[in-house]
Image 1: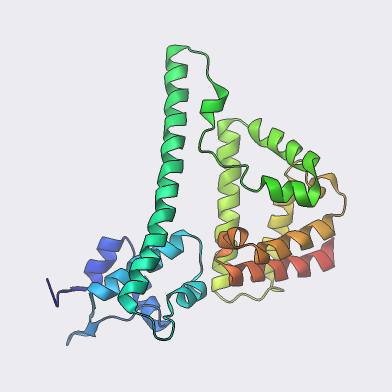
Image 2: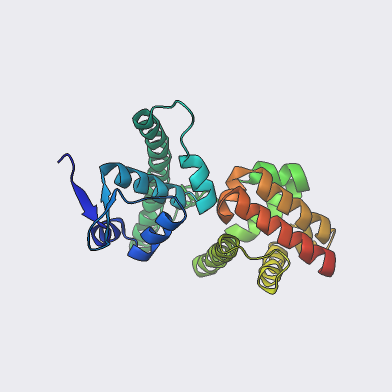
Length: 260
């Protein structure tokens, strides 16, 4: 109904977040409450809820809070309602692509389960439908050659399910820790950042076919990757956006100069 609003506790529960997070969004100017009640509690109206939905969608895409603030900053003379609709339509298209990809993955897993239960011959082309581990194929082949991609691809496909899950978790943990360090304002030369850089290089060394794994031109390879993280939004998203990727690049540069 017009004029209806919700308390900070209600919004935190509905959005699956915390009151502390919402207060932090207010403190940094990302999401202000529509009003503050006499008891000091923040309340949010419909416009605030739409903004929060966009914030959460952008977080889901891997953007950091500074990048989200830039995205949500209105342009001069723009119509706010139309801007919101256009932006949400873009998000909706992305979510539908993800929905389709996940649906294909679900079908692939169901195929494997049914085949194993029935003792049937599995069809490899169906088992990996929707698993987009080749999305950087062209970049890898262009920068380091077809043989580099082929070796890493054979290694990835040769993993057991448990090995692949463990490796993916390791990648996710590393990306999460990089993003958290960047958002907390950690210095690229600090012990925390340099430990992350060490973990990052160790991870790169574990991937067959890469110059890091072969021991050839490791320093140049690491520096080149750092530059690519910043230049390509797809890579930058893994570290909270361009600002996070810049932090990763700078930390890798410091580490490479001292250790590679």
